[in-house]
Image (cartoon, rainbow, N blue to C red; front, top):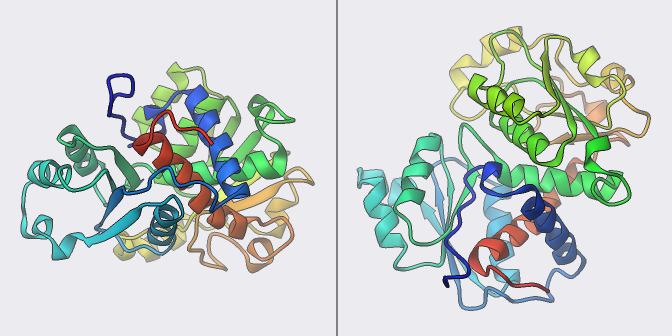
Length: 314
C-alpha cells in the first residue's frame, strides 16, 4: 500500500461510499464482459478463512483470484491454530506477513472486526451473522443488468421487497438502500425484525426503508422481490419454530403477481422450495437466481481489485 492508497477493508457496505459502490459495480460489469482479459493481481495471494461451510463463496473467490492472475489459499479454521484458540489478533498479525488479502466467512461479526483491526492487509467479510456485503454486490449488479438501475434508470427509482427473516442479508440490503437511495420494504414476522441499530442508522440517513408484517403490502408494485432461507446455518435447532413463525411468508406465484409485471426474483441460495419460495417462482421466468449466483464471481473480482490493487483500472 502507498500513501495515496491507504489500507481499506470491506466488513459492511458502510465501508465504501455511494460513488465507490457505483464504481465497483461498473468494474464488475467490465470484468464480466472480459473475464480473463485482466491480471491486476498477478503474484498476489488471498487467504480464505472458513468457519462456515460454503459453495458459491469458495468457488467465486478461488476462481476469481485465478482469473485475476493471483492465487487463493483455502484455510479451514478448525484445521488451523485459530481452531486451537489462537487469539484472532495473533492470527491476523501473522497472516498479514504471508498474504496480500484475507477473506473470512464466519459466525460472529465481532471476530472479523477484531481481525481487521490487527491486519495490515485488506480483510473482506464473505459472510457473518450480521452482514453479507459480497452477496449484495452480486445482487446489485444483477439489478443494474436486468433493470437498468444506475444506468438507464436512476437507483432512486428502484423499489425492492425483502420477504422473511431480518437477517444478515436484510441488513446488507438496508445498507445498500442507504448508499444508492432505492426504496426498500421489509416484510418480517414479529420477533424477526432487522437489527434496531441498523434500522435507526438507515432512518438517520434518510433512507426509504420500512418494515411491515404483511408480505402483500411489501411486494405491491415493486421491481425486485428477494428472500432467504428461514433457518440459516447455526439456527438448525430453531427450524421448527421458524417454520411456524414464517407461515404466510412464502414467495409464491400469488405473491409475485402483486409486484410489477417486469419484477425479478432473487435468492442468495441455497433455497428450500416449498418453504421461503415456491418451485414455480424460483424456477420460473421472473427468477434470475442463477445469473445472480454467477455475479458473485464478477462482483467479488471487482472487490478484490479495489482492495488489493487500489487505483487499477482496465
